[in-house]
Image 1 (cartoon, rainbow, N blue to C red):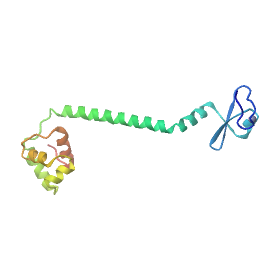
Image 2 (image 1 turned 60 degrees about the vertical axis):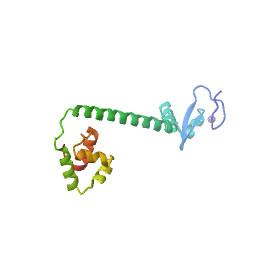
Image 3 (image 1 turned 135 degrees about the vertical axis):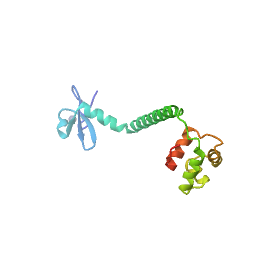
Image 4 (image 1 turned 180 degrees about the vertical axis):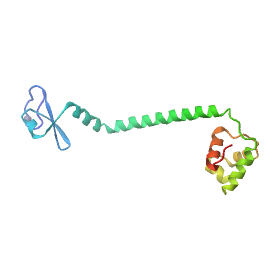
Length: 145
Ligand SMILES: [Zn+2]
């Protein structure tokens, strides 16, 4: 049994929905004139609006997915670029660019979020920087290795 939310009478046939301010009421035909009749679609929209929480969760999920995808693409980029040769005097280049930028080894290491010992080894050309580290150094010192 469906009752009109305004007069309390039983609604015969299809109930009508009207909007009064921000609230929506299920009313009988007689009471429908008290407000703006809303369509089924509008009703669906109201429902969507009330479930904003889950909508946000959905969006967050979507954003995470997009991020993961982007990371995957970056990874793919790296793999493609891995075949590229690095300058064989990369250590000297980094050191020079770093000194030109007025950065101490420790400061540069901090900025690229790596250990100073790693940076030192790279500058001494004891080890090759990984692609990720190399990219960070290149970006920060605006050089190309
Ligand atoms: Zn009524």
